[in-house]
Image (tube, rainbow, N blue to C red):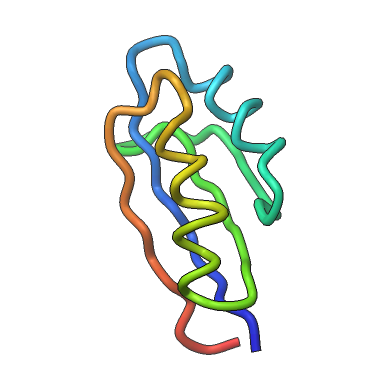
Length: 78
């Protein structure tokens, strides 16, 4: 069974569009959308294991320019 999670992202002012575009291109990201509220972008991603999730997805997401904070919310029931 794969690991799936939503990641809530805060960005620098005016960077939500470029962040959404950049993370959409990361392998394993299944959804990335700009939103309003306390977060600027919400994404959903999946990987084969939690180790892969951290190594292949989170490390790349956190390296995207313009991101100031992330909150990862793993999906508990699939």
